[in-house]
Every structure is written in structure tokens, then in C-alpha cells.
Length: 278
Image (cartoon, rainbow, N blue to C red; front, side):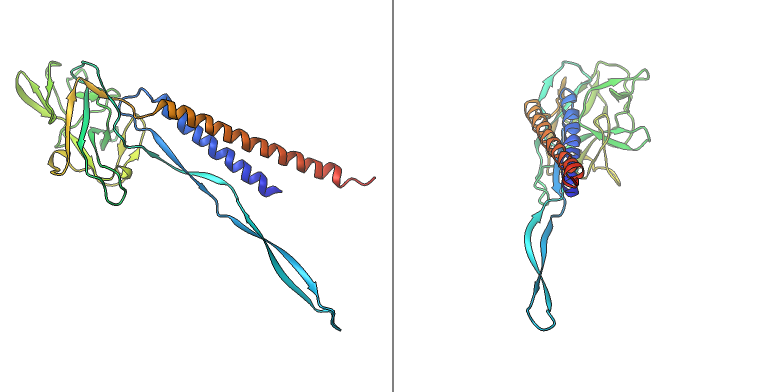
């Protein structure tokens, strides 16, 4: 009986965490460059139930023999194993702002091990001074003319240096060159992730590697991409599907809750009525 409590409770916890993940996706449906999280559910190992019987042989010493009768498998619950970002390009939308840039993946090779295409990311400087990666090209200039993200992180060039501009009248070419008065003054740094699943997701649309940095995307001969000035890549969250998944998770949570209530009533009846002596 108590196993039923644990099984139903684990289902409720798993669906609660899934609902929290889907809610976060929905709240970032309009965040530029946001990559929606997706979850994987795993069941705990099943238990094989058996009944122990005892047979008495009618001999002089009345020998007893025990035998096992299989009953069947018993599920022991479920849990949300992990969340993994969905590395798929979002739709591009035009903003007209000269500091807004979107990455358009033209041809990305598919990783043979994962079956997933690679992806290009902007390289920015994190608060700890280490390289971070993002698909959010909503850039701006700070008071000193440095090109930064909307959250104030410095955008880096391919050599890992900050990009300082003398004017906001800039033009950005398809290969990331920043032009002022017809002269190149810098280039936006881009990193290429052959296997994006190795990236660790952080807040504000940032990703990082556990060790090392992504290779320079401009030096990769087997990929094709271009930058679009005056555009932003939107979130790849599917709002309609996310709402449907949220309702499904809520119904599953509600079903487990009713099972838990039924177990509770059964235990109450067993404790207060079945064992009563009249």
C-alpha cells in the first residue's frame, strides 16, 4: 500500500517540474534567441513481485517445501531525468535597428553521433571574464562606445577582444565585419558548436562550455552562415504546443493527486474500521 503513495507522489513531482519548465518556455516566447527546454521522463526500475507458498508433504516427518509464484511487475514511479535545450533556429524578424544582428544558419553539418546539426553562437564576455555564447543579437553601445548585449556583457571579436566603436552609424556585413565610414573597425566574434548538447545553459540566454572555448566559426570550412543586420532571431518556443503540453502535465498531476487521495482513504479505512473489534 505504501508503495502506491511513493509511486503517485513521484508522478506528481515529475509533472510539477515539467510544468515549471514549460512555464519558463512560455514566459520566454518573445525573448530573442531563446532556446526552449525539453524534458525526458524516466521510470524507476520495476520490481518483480512473487508470492511465497508452502506445501506440506504427507510423510512421516511432514516435510515442508517452499515455492515462488510470480505475480508480475510493479512500477515504482517516474522522474524527470534532465532538461535539454532545443537547438533549432527561431524565426527572423526585422527591427530596423543597426545594432540588432541575427545569425542565419545556411548549412550546418549533422553530427554523426547525435544526429543533430551544429550551430553558430555570438561570443561575449561573461561577468567572470570567461567566454559565454548566445544567439541573442540584441546589441547596444555603452557610454564608452563598446558593443554590448542588452544585459551589459561585452561582445568580443574573433581574437577575444572587446569591440569599441566611435559612432552608432555602423554597417554590419554578412561575414560579421563592422563598417564605419566605409572602413572596417572590427568583426563580431562567432563560435561554432559541432555538438550543441555539450553547452551548459545559463541565465539571460547564455551558454558555456565545461572546459575550453568554442572554435572560431569563421575558420570552419564545412559550414555556411551569414549575419543579417537589422534583424533579430526570435525564440524557438512553439506557444501552441507548449500550452497543450502544459495542460497535459496538469491533467497528469491531477490524476496522480486523485490516486494519492484514494490511497489515503484506503489507509484511513484500514486503520479505523477494518481492525475494529465489536
